[in-house]
Image (cartoon, rainbow, N blue to C red; front, side, top):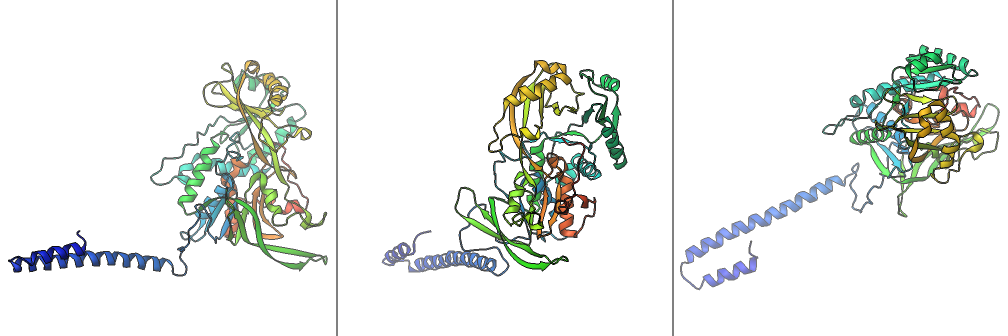
Length: 498
Protein backbone atom coordinates (compact mmCIF):
# COMPACT_ATOMS: atom_id res chain seq x y z
CA UNK A 1 0.00 0.00 0.00
CA UNK A 2 1.37 3.47 -1.00
CA UNK A 3 1.95 6.04 1.75
CA UNK A 4 -0.85 8.63 1.97
CA UNK A 5 1.29 11.72 0.94
CA UNK A 6 2.44 9.93 -2.23
CA UNK A 7 -1.12 9.10 -3.21
CA UNK A 8 -2.30 12.69 -2.67
CA UNK A 9 0.54 14.03 -4.79
CA UNK A 10 -0.40 11.66 -7.61
CA UNK A 11 -4.04 12.76 -7.43
CA UNK A 12 -3.02 16.47 -7.49
CA UNK A 13 -1.03 15.85 -10.65
CA UNK A 14 -3.93 14.10 -12.32
CA UNK A 15 -6.26 17.08 -11.61
CA UNK A 16 -4.34 19.17 -14.19
CA UNK A 17 -5.72 16.86 -16.86
CA UNK A 18 -9.28 16.15 -18.06
CA UNK A 19 -11.46 13.20 -17.17
CA UNK A 20 -12.13 14.53 -13.66
CA UNK A 21 -14.97 12.07 -13.18
CA UNK A 22 -12.64 9.12 -13.52
CA UNK A 23 -10.13 10.71 -11.15
CA UNK A 24 -12.79 11.46 -8.55
CA UNK A 25 -13.93 7.86 -8.78
CA UNK A 26 -10.33 6.69 -8.26
CA UNK A 27 -9.97 8.97 -5.24
CA UNK A 28 -13.20 7.67 -3.72
CA UNK A 29 -12.15 4.04 -4.14
CA UNK A 30 -8.75 4.67 -2.57
CA UNK A 31 -10.32 6.48 0.39
CA UNK A 32 -12.55 3.49 1.08
CA UNK A 33 -9.56 1.13 0.75
CA UNK A 34 -7.41 3.27 3.04
CA UNK A 35 -10.13 3.42 5.68
CA UNK A 36 -10.46 -0.33 5.59
CA UNK A 37 -6.77 -0.92 6.27
CA UNK A 38 -6.55 1.76 8.93
CA UNK A 39 -9.55 0.52 10.88
CA UNK A 40 -8.51 -3.13 10.51
CA UNK A 41 -5.12 -2.34 12.07
CA UNK A 42 -6.79 -0.31 14.81
CA UNK A 43 -9.21 -3.14 15.54
CA UNK A 44 -6.32 -5.57 15.80
CA UNK A 45 -4.55 -3.36 18.36
CA UNK A 46 -7.78 -2.89 20.32
CA UNK A 47 -8.37 -6.65 20.38
CA UNK A 48 -4.86 -7.32 21.71
CA UNK A 49 -5.32 -4.60 24.32
CA UNK A 50 -8.63 -6.10 25.47
CA UNK A 51 -7.03 -9.56 25.82
CA UNK A 52 -4.13 -8.20 27.89
CA UNK A 53 -6.47 -6.16 30.06
CA UNK A 54 -8.57 -9.28 30.75
CA UNK A 55 -5.45 -11.26 31.62
CA UNK A 56 -4.40 -8.59 34.10
CA UNK A 57 -7.59 -8.90 36.12
CA UNK A 58 -7.31 -10.41 39.65
CA UNK A 59 -6.86 -14.17 39.63
CA UNK A 60 -4.86 -14.32 36.40
CA UNK A 61 -1.14 -15.13 35.99
CA UNK A 62 -0.39 -12.16 33.72
CA UNK A 63 2.36 -9.76 34.77
CA UNK A 64 3.82 -6.74 32.95
CA UNK A 65 7.31 -7.66 34.15
CA UNK A 66 9.81 -9.93 32.44
CA UNK A 67 10.02 -13.40 34.06
CA UNK A 68 13.22 -15.40 34.32
CA UNK A 69 12.77 -18.69 32.40
CA UNK A 70 12.16 -21.59 34.78
CA UNK A 71 11.21 -19.39 37.71
CA UNK A 72 8.68 -21.15 39.96
CA UNK A 73 5.30 -19.54 40.54
CA UNK A 74 4.92 -17.21 43.50
CA UNK A 75 2.16 -19.37 44.96
CA UNK A 76 1.46 -23.08 45.06
CA UNK A 77 -0.57 -25.48 47.12
CA UNK A 78 2.17 -28.09 47.44
CA UNK A 79 5.92 -27.76 46.89
CA UNK A 80 7.87 -31.02 46.46
CA UNK A 81 11.56 -30.68 47.30
CA UNK A 82 13.47 -33.15 45.14
CA UNK A 83 12.68 -34.17 41.57
CA UNK A 84 13.87 -37.76 41.65
CA UNK A 85 11.58 -40.73 41.11
CA UNK A 86 10.05 -40.37 44.59
CA UNK A 87 9.20 -36.68 44.13
CA UNK A 88 7.65 -37.20 40.71
CA UNK A 89 5.69 -40.19 41.96
CA UNK A 90 4.16 -38.06 44.71
CA UNK A 91 3.40 -35.32 42.16
CA UNK A 92 1.73 -37.79 39.78
CA UNK A 93 -0.50 -39.29 42.47
CA UNK A 94 -1.49 -35.88 43.82
CA UNK A 95 -2.77 -34.92 40.37
CA UNK A 96 -4.28 -38.36 39.84
CA UNK A 97 -6.33 -37.98 43.02
CA UNK A 98 -7.52 -34.40 42.50
CA UNK A 99 -11.26 -34.20 41.87
CA UNK A 100 -11.17 -31.15 39.57
CA UNK A 101 -8.54 -30.35 36.94
CA UNK A 102 -5.92 -27.93 38.36
CA UNK A 103 -7.60 -27.99 41.77
CA UNK A 104 -4.19 -28.68 43.37
CA UNK A 105 -1.25 -26.57 42.23
CA UNK A 106 1.91 -28.69 42.57
CA UNK A 107 5.50 -27.53 42.06
CA UNK A 108 8.47 -29.94 41.90
CA UNK A 109 11.86 -28.34 42.64
CA UNK A 110 15.00 -30.21 41.52
CA UNK A 111 18.48 -28.73 41.94
CA UNK A 112 20.24 -30.89 39.32
CA UNK A 113 18.78 -30.38 35.83
CA UNK A 114 21.19 -32.96 34.39
CA UNK A 115 20.35 -35.62 36.99
CA UNK A 116 24.03 -36.55 36.83
CA UNK A 117 24.16 -37.19 40.60
CA UNK A 118 20.58 -38.35 41.11
CA UNK A 119 20.28 -41.56 43.11
CA UNK A 120 17.42 -42.69 40.86
CA UNK A 121 19.45 -43.02 37.69
CA UNK A 122 22.59 -44.33 39.41
CA UNK A 123 20.91 -47.32 41.03
CA UNK A 124 20.95 -50.99 40.01
CA UNK A 125 17.25 -50.83 39.11
CA UNK A 126 16.07 -53.93 40.96
CA UNK A 127 12.65 -54.76 42.41
CA UNK A 128 11.92 -57.57 44.88
CA UNK A 129 9.38 -58.69 47.47
CA UNK A 130 11.90 -60.63 49.55
CA UNK A 131 11.80 -58.51 52.70
CA UNK A 132 11.06 -59.42 56.31
CA UNK A 133 8.65 -56.54 57.09
CA UNK A 134 5.09 -56.84 55.74
CA UNK A 135 5.05 -53.11 54.90
CA UNK A 136 8.07 -53.46 52.59
CA UNK A 137 6.60 -56.55 50.92
CA UNK A 138 3.27 -54.78 50.34
CA UNK A 139 4.97 -51.67 48.95
CA UNK A 140 7.00 -53.69 46.45
CA UNK A 141 4.01 -55.85 45.43
CA UNK A 142 1.94 -52.73 44.73
CA UNK A 143 4.82 -51.11 42.86
CA UNK A 144 5.40 -54.23 40.76
CA UNK A 145 1.75 -54.16 39.72
CA UNK A 146 2.15 -50.49 38.76
CA UNK A 147 5.27 -51.23 36.69
CA UNK A 148 3.70 -54.20 34.89
CA UNK A 149 0.74 -52.01 33.89
CA UNK A 150 2.68 -48.78 33.54
CA UNK A 151 0.97 -47.55 30.38
CA UNK A 152 -2.39 -47.67 32.11
CA UNK A 153 -0.96 -45.07 34.48
CA UNK A 154 1.68 -43.06 32.64
CA UNK A 155 0.70 -43.13 28.99
CA UNK A 156 0.45 -39.63 27.46
CA UNK A 157 -1.73 -38.95 24.42
CA UNK A 158 0.28 -38.63 21.18
CA UNK A 159 3.45 -39.83 22.93
CA UNK A 160 5.24 -43.17 22.60
CA UNK A 161 4.27 -45.91 25.09
CA UNK A 162 6.55 -46.40 28.09
CA UNK A 163 8.97 -49.33 27.78
CA UNK A 164 10.66 -50.00 31.15
CA UNK A 165 12.62 -53.00 29.79
CA UNK A 166 11.30 -54.90 32.80
CA UNK A 167 13.22 -58.18 33.15
CA UNK A 168 11.30 -60.70 35.29
CA UNK A 169 14.21 -63.02 36.10
CA UNK A 170 13.64 -62.79 39.86
CA UNK A 171 15.94 -62.45 42.87
CA UNK A 172 17.92 -65.32 44.34
CA UNK A 173 19.06 -64.90 47.96
CA UNK A 174 21.51 -67.37 49.49
CA UNK A 175 21.84 -68.16 53.20
CA UNK A 176 24.58 -69.74 55.25
CA UNK A 177 23.92 -72.14 58.09
CA UNK A 178 23.83 -69.28 60.60
CA UNK A 179 21.09 -67.39 58.73
CA UNK A 180 18.95 -70.17 57.27
CA UNK A 181 16.38 -69.88 60.07
CA UNK A 182 15.95 -66.16 59.30
CA UNK A 183 15.34 -66.94 55.63
CA UNK A 184 12.69 -69.50 56.58
CA UNK A 185 10.93 -66.99 58.85
CA UNK A 186 11.08 -64.33 56.14
CA UNK A 187 9.63 -66.79 53.64
CA UNK A 188 6.59 -67.43 55.85
CA UNK A 189 5.96 -63.68 56.10
CA UNK A 190 6.36 -63.21 52.36
CA UNK A 191 3.91 -66.00 51.57
CA UNK A 192 1.35 -64.64 54.05
CA UNK A 193 1.48 -61.20 52.45
CA UNK A 194 1.10 -62.60 48.93
CA UNK A 195 4.60 -62.80 47.44
CA UNK A 196 5.43 -65.78 45.21
CA UNK A 197 8.73 -67.00 46.67
CA UNK A 198 10.10 -70.55 46.98
CA UNK A 199 12.90 -72.05 49.06
CA UNK A 200 15.62 -74.09 47.35
CA UNK A 201 18.09 -76.63 48.72
CA UNK A 202 21.68 -76.65 47.44
CA UNK A 203 20.81 -79.55 45.10
CA UNK A 204 17.82 -77.65 43.71
CA UNK A 205 19.96 -74.54 43.25
CA UNK A 206 22.50 -76.57 41.28
CA UNK A 207 19.76 -78.06 39.12
CA UNK A 208 18.31 -74.64 38.23
CA UNK A 209 21.60 -72.73 38.03
CA UNK A 210 24.45 -75.14 37.18
CA UNK A 211 26.91 -72.26 36.79
CA UNK A 212 26.71 -71.52 40.52
CA UNK A 213 29.04 -72.82 43.23
CA UNK A 214 26.94 -73.75 46.29
CA UNK A 215 29.79 -74.12 48.79
CA UNK A 216 28.64 -72.71 52.12
CA UNK A 217 25.04 -72.29 50.95
CA UNK A 218 22.48 -74.31 52.91
CA UNK A 219 19.33 -72.57 51.66
CA UNK A 220 18.20 -70.07 49.02
CA UNK A 221 14.99 -68.16 48.35
CA UNK A 222 13.90 -67.43 44.79
CA UNK A 223 11.24 -64.98 43.60
CA UNK A 224 8.95 -66.47 40.96
CA UNK A 225 6.88 -63.36 40.13
CA UNK A 226 7.12 -59.57 40.23
CA UNK A 227 10.88 -59.54 40.78
CA UNK A 228 13.74 -58.55 38.53
CA UNK A 229 15.07 -55.26 37.22
CA UNK A 230 14.13 -52.36 34.95
CA UNK A 231 15.49 -49.08 33.58
CA UNK A 232 15.36 -46.38 36.31
CA UNK A 233 15.83 -43.47 33.89
CA UNK A 234 12.80 -44.53 31.88
CA UNK A 235 10.61 -44.69 35.00
CA UNK A 236 11.76 -41.25 36.15
CA UNK A 237 11.04 -39.65 32.79
CA UNK A 238 7.71 -41.42 32.42
CA UNK A 239 6.51 -40.13 35.81
CA UNK A 240 7.80 -36.65 35.06
CA UNK A 241 6.27 -36.51 31.57
CA UNK A 242 2.89 -37.68 32.83
CA UNK A 243 2.84 -35.35 35.84
CA UNK A 244 3.72 -32.32 33.71
CA UNK A 245 0.98 -33.25 31.24
CA UNK A 246 -1.42 -33.22 34.19
CA UNK A 247 -0.42 -29.69 35.18
CA UNK A 248 2.52 -30.11 37.57
CA UNK A 249 5.00 -27.21 37.40
CA UNK A 250 8.67 -28.23 37.06
CA UNK A 251 11.37 -25.95 38.43
CA UNK A 252 15.13 -26.43 38.36
CA UNK A 253 16.58 -24.65 41.36
CA UNK A 254 17.86 -25.30 44.87
CA UNK A 255 15.79 -24.94 48.00
CA UNK A 256 17.91 -22.84 50.35
CA UNK A 257 15.52 -22.25 53.24
CA UNK A 258 12.01 -21.70 54.48
CA UNK A 259 9.90 -18.96 56.00
CA UNK A 260 7.59 -20.09 58.76
CA UNK A 261 5.18 -19.03 61.45
CA UNK A 262 5.24 -20.55 64.93
CA UNK A 263 3.45 -20.76 68.24
CA UNK A 264 4.14 -22.43 71.57
CA UNK A 265 2.12 -25.23 73.15
CA UNK A 266 2.42 -26.85 76.54
CA UNK A 267 2.70 -30.65 76.77
CA UNK A 268 1.08 -32.82 79.41
CA UNK A 269 4.42 -32.85 81.25
CA UNK A 270 4.49 -29.06 81.40
CA UNK A 271 7.17 -28.69 78.70
CA UNK A 272 6.85 -25.95 76.08
CA UNK A 273 7.12 -26.93 72.43
CA UNK A 274 7.41 -24.54 69.52
CA UNK A 275 5.29 -25.69 66.61
CA UNK A 276 6.15 -24.36 63.18
CA UNK A 277 4.28 -24.06 59.93
CA UNK A 278 6.09 -23.36 56.66
CA UNK A 279 4.67 -20.41 54.74
CA UNK A 280 7.26 -19.99 51.97
CA UNK A 281 9.93 -22.09 50.26
CA UNK A 282 12.97 -20.11 49.11
CA UNK A 283 14.28 -21.31 45.74
CA UNK A 284 17.70 -20.25 44.44
CA UNK A 285 17.82 -20.25 40.65
CA UNK A 286 20.78 -22.06 39.04
CA UNK A 287 23.75 -19.96 37.87
CA UNK A 288 22.01 -16.84 39.12
CA UNK A 289 21.72 -14.60 42.17
CA UNK A 290 17.96 -14.54 41.76
CA UNK A 291 15.79 -16.15 44.42
CA UNK A 292 12.09 -16.86 44.34
CA UNK A 293 10.02 -17.34 47.50
CA UNK A 294 7.10 -19.67 46.82
CA UNK A 295 4.14 -19.29 49.13
CA UNK A 296 2.60 -22.69 49.85
CA UNK A 297 0.41 -24.70 52.17
CA UNK A 298 2.34 -28.00 52.21
CA UNK A 299 5.95 -29.10 51.61
CA UNK A 300 6.93 -32.67 50.73
CA UNK A 301 10.54 -33.59 51.49
CA UNK A 302 11.66 -36.12 48.87
CA UNK A 303 15.21 -34.81 48.70
CA UNK A 304 16.71 -38.28 49.01
CA UNK A 305 20.20 -38.29 50.47
CA UNK A 306 19.82 -34.57 51.25
CA UNK A 307 16.52 -34.95 53.12
CA UNK A 308 18.14 -34.60 56.52
CA UNK A 309 19.84 -31.36 55.49
CA UNK A 310 16.58 -29.98 54.08
CA UNK A 311 14.87 -30.78 57.40
CA UNK A 312 17.59 -28.87 59.25
CA UNK A 313 16.71 -25.73 57.25
CA UNK A 314 13.45 -25.46 59.17
CA UNK A 315 15.15 -26.15 62.50
CA UNK A 316 14.44 -29.87 62.89
CA UNK A 317 17.14 -31.33 65.12
CA UNK A 318 18.39 -27.96 66.40
CA UNK A 319 16.89 -28.21 69.88
CA UNK A 320 18.45 -29.55 73.09
CA UNK A 321 19.70 -33.11 72.96
CA UNK A 322 17.37 -35.78 74.36
CA UNK A 323 14.39 -33.59 73.48
CA UNK A 324 11.93 -33.89 70.60
CA UNK A 325 13.15 -30.67 68.90
CA UNK A 326 16.72 -31.96 69.16
CA UNK A 327 16.12 -35.20 67.23
CA UNK A 328 17.23 -34.83 63.59
CA UNK A 329 15.81 -36.68 60.61
CA UNK A 330 18.41 -39.51 60.47
CA UNK A 331 19.00 -39.54 56.71
CA UNK A 332 22.42 -38.96 55.22
CA UNK A 333 24.26 -39.76 51.96
CA UNK A 334 26.12 -43.06 51.75
CA UNK A 335 28.18 -43.76 48.65
CA UNK A 336 27.81 -47.07 46.84
CA UNK A 337 29.83 -48.35 43.87
CA UNK A 338 28.42 -50.23 40.89
CA UNK A 339 30.81 -51.99 38.53
CA UNK A 340 30.05 -53.16 34.99
CA UNK A 341 32.00 -56.29 34.09
CA UNK A 342 32.30 -58.30 30.89
CA UNK A 343 32.48 -62.08 30.92
CA UNK A 344 31.56 -63.95 27.70
CA UNK A 345 31.33 -67.29 29.56
CA UNK A 346 29.20 -65.93 32.42
CA UNK A 347 25.63 -66.99 33.34
CA UNK A 348 23.08 -66.81 30.54
CA UNK A 349 19.45 -65.80 30.21
CA UNK A 350 18.43 -67.87 33.23
CA UNK A 351 20.54 -65.68 35.52
CA UNK A 352 18.56 -64.05 38.36
CA UNK A 353 19.49 -61.01 40.43
CA UNK A 354 21.77 -62.89 42.83
CA UNK A 355 22.27 -61.62 46.40
CA UNK A 356 24.91 -63.74 48.11
CA UNK A 357 25.14 -64.02 51.87
CA UNK A 358 28.71 -62.70 51.60
CA UNK A 359 27.22 -59.32 50.61
CA UNK A 360 28.10 -59.34 46.92
CA UNK A 361 25.43 -59.12 44.22
CA UNK A 362 25.24 -59.25 40.43
CA UNK A 363 22.73 -59.26 37.58
CA UNK A 364 22.85 -59.36 33.79
CA UNK A 365 23.07 -56.11 31.87
CA UNK A 366 21.78 -56.74 28.36
CA UNK A 367 22.63 -59.79 26.27
CA UNK A 368 26.31 -59.26 25.44
CA UNK A 369 28.00 -60.93 28.39
CA UNK A 370 27.84 -57.82 30.56
CA UNK A 371 26.88 -57.76 34.24
CA UNK A 372 26.64 -55.18 36.98
CA UNK A 373 27.91 -56.00 40.44
CA UNK A 374 28.81 -54.49 43.79
CA UNK A 375 28.39 -54.77 47.54
CA UNK A 376 27.90 -52.52 50.54
CA UNK A 377 31.00 -51.82 52.63
CA UNK A 378 31.27 -52.48 56.33
CA UNK A 379 30.12 -49.65 58.58
CA UNK A 380 33.73 -48.90 59.52
CA UNK A 381 34.74 -48.72 55.83
CA UNK A 382 32.16 -46.24 54.55
CA UNK A 383 33.78 -44.25 51.70
CA UNK A 384 34.15 -40.49 51.52
CA UNK A 385 30.98 -38.85 50.17
CA UNK A 386 32.49 -35.55 49.04
CA UNK A 387 32.79 -36.85 45.46
CA UNK A 388 31.34 -39.65 43.36
CA UNK A 389 34.76 -41.00 42.45
CA UNK A 390 34.94 -44.79 42.18
CA UNK A 391 37.36 -46.88 44.25
CA UNK A 392 38.53 -49.65 41.93
CA UNK A 393 40.60 -51.25 44.70
CA UNK A 394 37.32 -51.95 46.49
CA UNK A 395 36.29 -54.13 43.56
CA UNK A 396 39.56 -56.04 43.39
CA UNK A 397 39.89 -56.53 47.15
CA UNK A 398 36.27 -57.05 48.21
CA UNK A 399 33.88 -57.68 45.33
CA UNK A 400 35.78 -59.83 42.85
CA UNK A 401 36.98 -62.57 45.25
CA UNK A 402 33.44 -63.14 46.59
CA UNK A 403 31.92 -62.96 43.12
CA UNK A 404 34.38 -65.45 41.60
CA UNK A 405 33.87 -67.82 44.52
CA UNK A 406 30.12 -67.96 43.94
CA UNK A 407 30.32 -67.97 40.12
CA UNK A 408 33.65 -69.53 38.98
CA UNK A 409 33.23 -68.20 35.44
CA UNK A 410 33.76 -64.68 36.80
CA UNK A 411 37.39 -65.45 37.56
CA UNK A 412 38.15 -64.26 33.99
CA UNK A 413 35.95 -61.16 33.93
CA UNK A 414 37.12 -57.68 32.94
CA UNK A 415 35.81 -54.40 34.36
CA UNK A 416 34.45 -52.25 31.54
CA UNK A 417 33.07 -49.29 33.50
CA UNK A 418 31.89 -48.20 36.94
CA UNK A 419 30.00 -45.44 38.69
CA UNK A 420 28.96 -44.37 42.18
CA UNK A 421 25.66 -43.12 43.58
CA UNK A 422 24.18 -42.09 46.90
CA UNK A 423 21.81 -44.01 49.13
CA UNK A 424 19.36 -41.95 51.18
CA UNK A 425 20.62 -43.92 54.16
CA UNK A 426 18.44 -44.04 57.25
CA UNK A 427 20.95 -44.44 60.08
CA UNK A 428 18.16 -45.28 62.54
CA UNK A 429 16.76 -48.49 61.01
CA UNK A 430 17.44 -48.39 57.23
CA UNK A 431 13.73 -48.20 56.37
CA UNK A 432 11.56 -45.59 54.74
CA UNK A 433 10.34 -42.56 56.68
CA UNK A 434 6.83 -41.37 55.85
CA UNK A 435 4.40 -38.79 57.16
CA UNK A 436 4.33 -35.29 58.59
CA UNK A 437 6.69 -34.02 61.28
CA UNK A 438 4.89 -33.36 64.59
CA UNK A 439 6.77 -30.08 65.12
CA UNK A 440 6.46 -28.86 61.50
CA UNK A 441 3.04 -30.17 60.69
CA UNK A 442 2.94 -29.17 57.03
CA UNK A 443 6.25 -30.82 56.06
CA UNK A 444 5.71 -34.39 54.88
CA UNK A 445 8.52 -36.90 54.33
CA UNK A 446 9.13 -39.74 51.88
CA UNK A 447 12.78 -40.61 52.37
CA UNK A 448 15.33 -42.87 54.07
CA UNK A 449 14.66 -46.01 52.04
CA UNK A 450 18.35 -46.95 52.11
CA UNK A 451 18.50 -48.55 48.67
CA UNK A 452 14.92 -49.72 48.00
CA UNK A 453 13.29 -46.36 47.32
CA UNK A 454 13.32 -46.70 43.52
CA UNK A 455 11.43 -49.99 43.52
CA UNK A 456 8.85 -48.79 46.07
CA UNK A 457 8.37 -45.28 44.68
CA UNK A 458 5.08 -45.89 42.82
CA UNK A 459 3.33 -47.18 45.95
CA UNK A 460 4.98 -44.65 48.26
CA UNK A 461 3.86 -41.76 46.04
CA UNK A 462 0.29 -42.97 46.25
CA UNK A 463 0.52 -43.34 50.04
CA UNK A 464 1.84 -39.80 50.55
CA UNK A 465 -0.86 -38.38 48.27
CA UNK A 466 -3.46 -40.18 50.39
CA UNK A 467 -2.03 -38.72 53.59
CA UNK A 468 -2.14 -35.20 52.16
CA UNK A 469 -5.49 -35.24 50.35
CA UNK A 470 -7.44 -37.80 52.39
CA UNK A 471 -5.79 -37.27 55.76
CA UNK A 472 -5.03 -41.00 56.14
CA UNK A 473 -3.80 -44.09 54.32
CA UNK A 474 -6.63 -45.57 52.25
CA UNK A 475 -4.83 -48.28 50.24
CA UNK A 476 -1.94 -49.68 52.29
CA UNK A 477 -1.59 -49.12 56.02
CA UNK A 478 1.95 -47.76 56.32
CA UNK A 479 1.53 -46.14 59.73
CA UNK A 480 4.38 -48.28 61.09
CA UNK A 481 6.78 -46.32 58.85
CA UNK A 482 5.64 -42.99 60.31
CA UNK A 483 8.26 -40.43 61.27
CA UNK A 484 7.07 -40.60 64.89
CA UNK A 485 8.92 -43.89 65.37
CA UNK A 486 12.16 -41.90 65.12
CA UNK A 487 11.03 -39.51 67.88
CA UNK A 488 9.83 -42.38 70.10
CA UNK A 489 12.99 -44.43 69.38
CA UNK A 490 11.04 -47.45 68.10
CA UNK A 491 13.01 -48.86 65.13
CA UNK A 492 11.46 -50.97 62.35
CA UNK A 493 14.29 -53.38 61.68
CA UNK A 494 14.50 -55.20 58.36
CA UNK A 495 16.31 -58.56 58.38
CA UNK A 496 16.89 -58.67 54.64
CA UNK A 497 18.81 -55.47 53.90
CA UNK A 498 20.72 -55.15 50.62
